[in-house]
Length: 292
Image 1 (cartoon, rainbow, N blue to C red):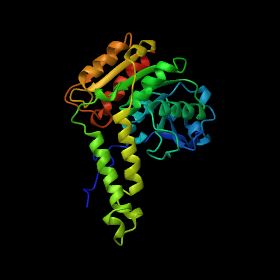
Image 2 (image 1 turned 90 degrees about the horizontal axis):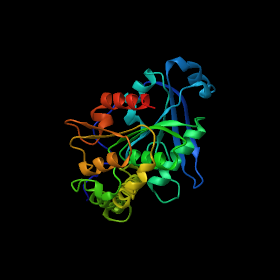
Image 3 (image 1 turned 135 degrees about the vertical axis):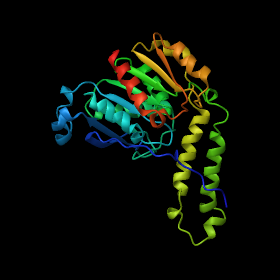
């Protein structure tokens, strides 16, 4: 029997407590439904009660994009800090993750970036400050590069421009193969002959296959030309942990490729800064927004 694989980072995190003004499943053309959430400051209590009716009267939001295999709640403390500052937050669960569904299109970062923009518009916002972590930071770089008319500022945390930018110790393909072996065991292998309903196994074969697909995406994507990042003109901060799984030279390349960007390296921290150093992420996010 294969070793039980882990689907998510095991350490817990605090979910947002800010006012939730809207939570919608936004349909995409390929059948996916993207879960989009709007959190608002207490000063916009009426919006929280009436479904963003006065969204046009609010400051532009911070659009938060999470990492692979996660959901938007990983930004819980950062969402609360931004809302406390008086600014709303739009957060999405990327497709096939959290409360969002898979759809039929090939999984790419460009596709997920487009999902985020559709979700932002569906909640009534035309522009946003971007905060992306890991996979979400890759999506944020793509959005800032390709849609400068929408992006007011950018905080990129733990991004990479190609699969080679990830440290070799992060065994993504091996993890994907482990998940597929687990799914095969319960669907087609010895496990399928046991008195076990696969829907009751954790992770289920379907969950294992979806997570394997998400991990494989990191093996073959992204492919971002650093020269193209010169098109990013908004105030930008590039952030990473001192012991990040993203190679330091990759973080430095992103910083050097974006004109006028600032570089913040968090001492003693690893890759998952929204959990390891949420207060520092919130501080840098608000400072970056303030530069706009």
